[in-house]
Length: 294
Ligand code: SAM
Image (cartoon, rainbow, N blue to C red; front, side, top):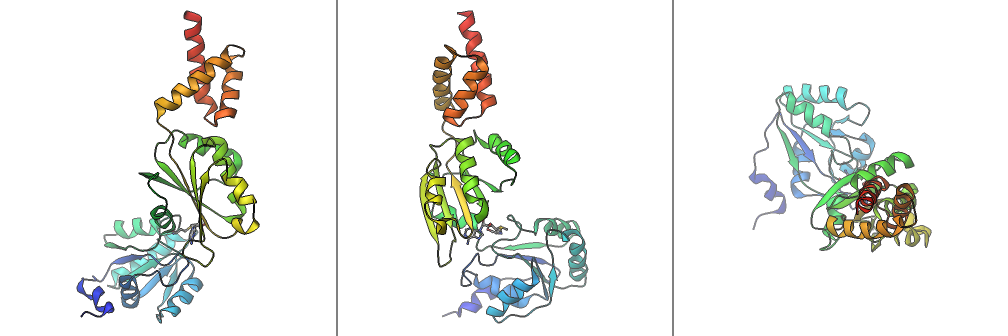
């Protein structure tokens, strides 16, 4: 029988290449055999935070020269990486946790390395988005990964409005200090009825996966301070069939228009349904013109 470490040997590992290596998102055991093989093989490692990576590598008995490649120096650090590739070295790129380039540095480095004519070789592994989705259930068919929403309420609401009619499930990353505020904003803009999965501290000691509606989300989080601690992935059900939603909106708007102006009807319908006020205004305007013509 093959030794586990020999499993990774059956492949070519070209020199002068950048290996993009996923590392664990909390549990040090969640690293692949091939990732360990490549981290042991490369000449140096480009890391988001060299101290974190040195500590992680030490747990696997690996020590390598490290190059800091973070949000603020990705372009200049890419030049150093390319110099090493030019001299025939193999380099790996890792982030602090999970898959590089996914809400983490790495994408610009990949662009620069490819533009300089060197191969970029991805090694799959942990990522919080896929880990949460794997345990979400059948209500998530397709999905759109949004990552972090803007921190400022106005910009956050504006971005959410652009996603309000999106049919696929939406996946967000969020930090503990904004988790309640963000779930509340999601319910306000997308409506309270959609399914929500709150995936917290995945792969860690205090892992929890809680499913509820968007309206219930903030209340559940506020029910216990411990529920607001740690790292979060939020998975939100996609928008309902447009026709169904449109019919429901039109029925509500038609009733409101009996007593109110187009503007007020749209505002109240938006408060009641969580749907976009602009979209409801357009529908209300069309309905009121139709009513005038009849
Ligand atoms: N590159 C990483 C990946 O592949 O998932 C993501 C890095 S991003 C800077 C960090 C965010 O990912 C956290 O704020 C949280 O939203 C999410 N995240 C990372 N690890 C997580 C975990 N163990 N449980 C839940 N969410 C996690």
